[in-house]
Image 1: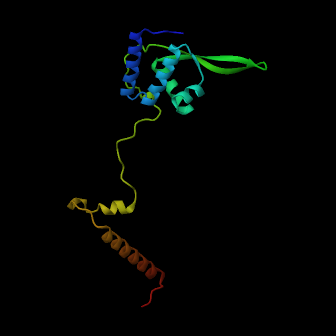
Image 2: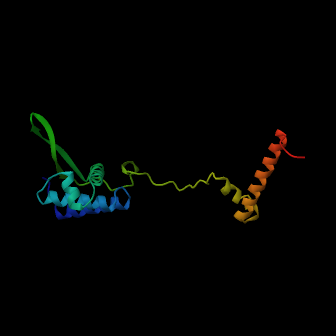
Image 3: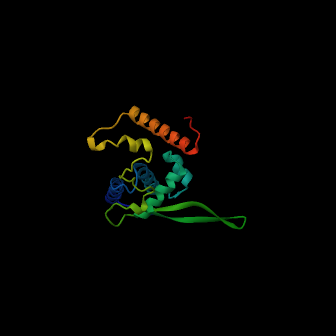
Length: 171
């Protein structure tokens, strides 16, 4: 079990907060990591994911994600522990160790779960959207009633042309 001095605790907490600022982890992840830190410093270094999730009132996937990110940032590590049950090894609660991150935090998109959303917006492929901006050179948008009337007139003209080609018109 590793005990950090109060100066190291302050530096560790500051690095966690900087990672929140750089969007490497969220506030929830930081809360989970601080809970694990406090537990390890209090002498309880063998925590299961379920115990952590119940204590911080979050889901298992959130806890696992926070621990994974904390490990990748160098804030903590763990060793898997196994016991024999009926002659077969079975994993039990991990043993956690707190580590002081070696470097200043920088934005790391490789540990983010979801990449930031693209800022480029593509226009819709709907015909009504394209027709609505036919008059953009004049700086205005045609009313939808005009578009609907033009679409209906085009439909009737195409239908009449088809009937003439097929020879089903009345003369």
